[in-house]
Length: 259
Image (tube, rainbow, N blue to C red; front, side, top):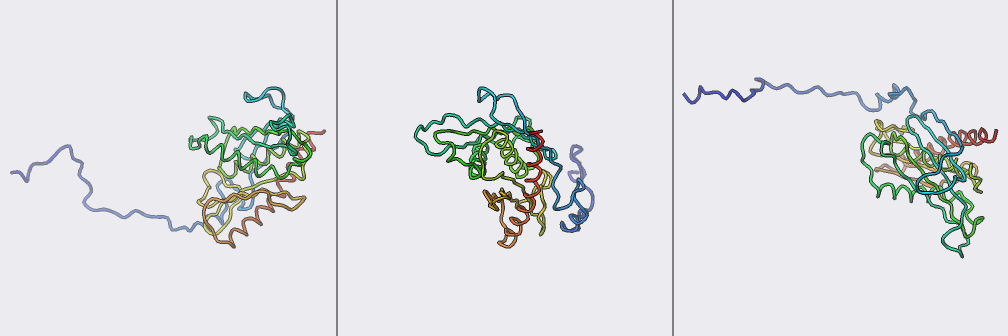
């Protein structure tokens, strides 16, 4: 009798199980047909850059010395530069350059970054863009750049866009520089480097390179993940070639601001 009793609340599974069908298309073959937005592997998203005045932020008072707006696909960033102005150290022979990087509350689809992440990014931006500024021309002064990410689409691509926006704002402020810093990012998908990855395309290994084309000098390299030395050198060379194209866009935006 006990064997005939059934639990009506229990959902009985099928009599046999079927193995799921996995895709067998290799990643390299899927990339050969192009990306989801139709770009080639070495193509960046469309860039719109403008140098012009922006309203003062809550952290500062007065109008900015220079400002810029940078758009790259879905990425939107604004930057305001204040200075050179009186610094904290009255006996300093060189100016102090500092970046303040912040995400807007609505910038990302998910709030995965913290204030610690923003602080680390601020230090990286200061160390990357700082070598391009002639700090010895402004003793006893400070130059501050306030970067706000309005919309983000890919972490590395957003950092590269922030560097380009800062460079444009510094030039708009009339700060003496050795050259304008241009940056781009890449992601390793399978055995191929893909330029300017979106958030959906981000891979475990990604790289950012900041480059001054006129003086042929790399000011910063940031890499996440592991790769071979040959792949690393290949990515750096490819990034510098793309930075030259970004540099031309920044120069055109500066020329347009003077007309």
